Length: 403
Ligand SMILES: Nc1ncnc2c1ncn2[C@@H]1O[C@H](COP(=O)(O)OP(=O)(O)O)[C@@H](O)[C@H]1O
Ligand SMILES: [Mg+2]
Image (cartoon, rainbow, N blue to C red; front, side, top):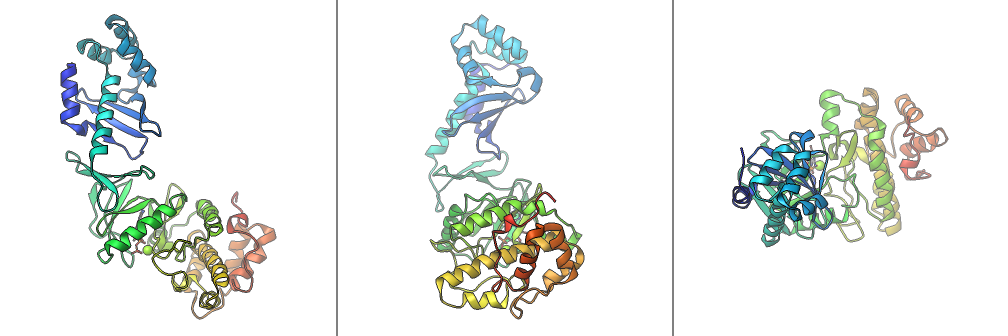
């Protein structure tokens, strides 16, 4: 099938669905009616830098750079055709037919059109530019400040989606999840977005925002750790937690505390565990619940840590929040990576009634396998009483990552 330049132009301008964002914000795909798919790569300023012919790959060579596009549009018909025939016979035919028009410039024009449409789209209540692709039933949300990658609605509804105390998964696909939180107010949702903006520097936190009233869109971070362990007794390597432990130290340096780390609030995909639930996070700028408020999950705290957090003394509270996050992270890691005996003991810990974990052989074995030998006893003492024996260094420096 051979198209005239007018036909291509019409296809792109009237059916803007031809140009679609991918899940990577530096990339767009363009599907032409000749059943060819091109990937348009864009730089940080949103300018198209190169075009890659996807199908069939070998015909178009690896990359058709902007410089080639410019050359083609400037050169005469015969010269352009010769170059294009070398790269892609079919594309050469289009160029010939289009009388010096070429696929690359057409794509760039389409991309410019898309950028223009996006800039004309008004912002919604949450500061997102919302663009719907009717053909595919996908709605994209672009952050108008362009600081955050875009989000989009997932492809499939989920009947009995995972649920926490507040939010339930209603839609999902491999890249995104959508959650409903019927009880949250508009104001509280906007505040959660501000908190998420503050945490966007940490890649161990799943990218997630309220995009509409009571509706969250998030990058799909994978399976919930608690679910995987409970339902399938799946064990994960300690390495999965390296990023989360490194980030935790960086958060603490900025006086950011998670306050509700647990296997129900971490998901795992491609071997990387990430945080999903920011409801209890506190930062120097605030958070949903006040700094002094004692919150969290009983099996992830200790009596001593609760007491410190009730002390009213800011410095003591900070120390207890730091140790509290480390304690909860260790409990979560032991739960996710240890044997059945250990994960059962993690669950059984009575955080409100006890000064710490009752250390057993299963704890000692885990520490021997996963903690650097010179720190093993520190970590066990910390687990037994985190207020009396704080960790000598941030968690990521105590673990045997190359185990
Ligand atoms: N980014 C995500 N990727 C994968 N699953 C998620 C994601 N966010 C949430 N979930 C799933 O939805 C559940 C509820 O989300 P969460 O934010 O923990 O809500 P709640 O505040 O109600 O605890 C989680 O336990 C998890 O199973
Ligand atoms: Mg949760």
